[in-house]
Image 1 (cartoon, rainbow, N blue to C red):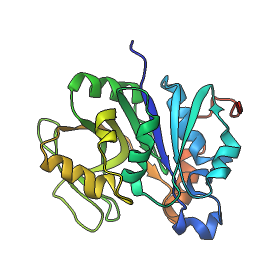
Image 2 (cartoon, rainbow, N blue to C red):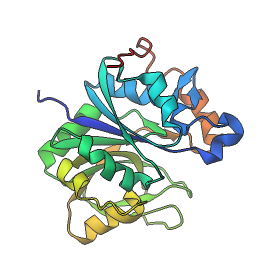
Image 3 (cartoon, rainbow, N blue to C red):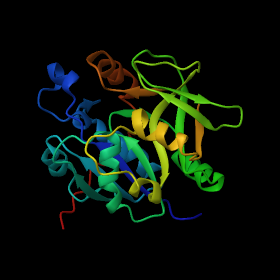
Image 4 (cartoon, one colour):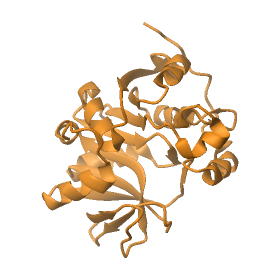
Length: 247
């Protein structure tokens, strides 16, 4: 089995819609089941064999850095710092310089889906696409939709205010080539799904869909945060507290 690529977690969000519950705590550190949400994502990566994670941090990044240090659950942690909000695409562009592998797994830091990440990596590597997007079947007015053809190719994206005639939505988990990440322009704030994916499709980049049959749970609003408390409280339990190694 080949070595798994680096993972990037986009966790720079302030969580403005959660401030009534979490106060000044950065959104990825919102507590779920007695521990920061970000721990669930790190434990998921560890469970699937990943060993190096780039944390793209912004708002109150010192809180995340102080909690995890440079190593957690035996995985090496590297930090990419946003000095101003860059959006998902801008944050990934900045983090690209920290990626050491030819491919990278990229995850949003405010949602969890129990995807087989190893199978996702294999599917992407063997499929030869420029990018692979995890999609799941759900209809929600405040989330983007993804149009997938009969061959499993992504044909269009629509974010939130728009809608496509499709039953799929993005889970916020992707596989990219490092080349594609590095080619994202450093022009300030930019969105992966609202700007970059449509541009890549228009330029005939191949984007595949990886269909996930389960549920994607995010903590973006007070209502969904409370739901996550119930649904995720017992996920990723078999692990010790983070290992600190500040060197």
